[in-house]
Image (cartoon, rainbow, N blue to C red):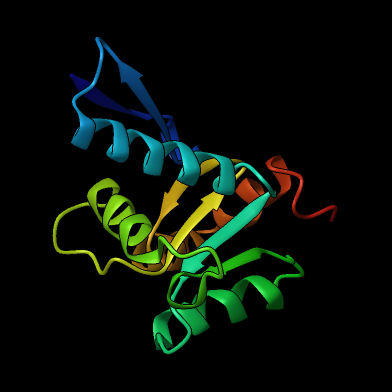
Length: 140
């Protein structure tokens, strides 16, 4: 059986850990593989944005980060060459609070920050830049 843990870490975001408690069923093994793929992708750079090419809120988040001097790795889920964008988007949607749009999803330092609302809230309350500095995305 698959179990997912989401651990809050103050204002530094959320870490996602997936634990396997026994031999998974075929459907659970596929879901586990998607979460592992997301974890690898999210840990590949200091800031990672999962979005969609036609999403205006994804554009807003990317422009904000670029305006702050951050060069995020951006995965446009509707244009992934190797496919699997829908599965990744579904997995990401399960990590967000209910009612949140499935994209954009932002990871900072390999930890889930959240969607557009969380990113904008952190920017407005002044916690985004310290998070980016802590993750090594900014050197100011």
